[in-house]
Image 1: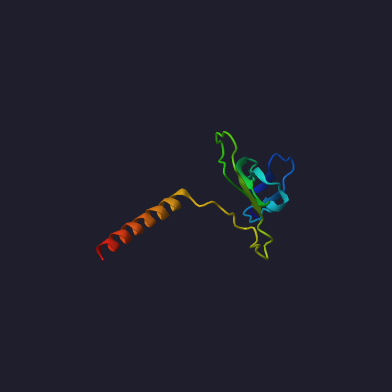
Image 2: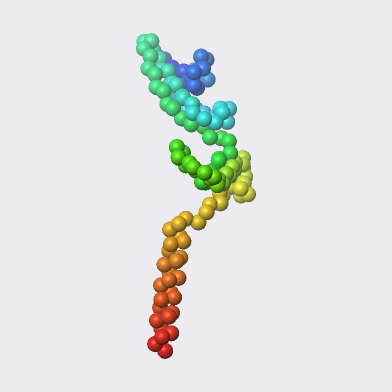
Length: 134
């Protein structure tokens, strides 16, 4: 039997590995057990001779409800009263999809208003022009 490398898998700064496996290995990381936010996955490999290799992979968990905010952007400079719209919605479970609250209402963008105004002005221009001829 040939000697195989081992991998130890750590989450964040834990001292105890969540898994110690022989390579090659396939596994599933259950993020439902982690709190939302930034985490690191640290994989330590040991070959049969005893040499070690380390790989650190940062990742972010977002299992909780998504939060959408309109009216303020990150690192914005604000003055006076600022109207905000906040919506939070979850994914439901893996078996059913929640429709209610899954879309965040948004205000109509300025470019849409400009397009509507230009179209109406153009239509009125031609309406007035053709009424004059007849």
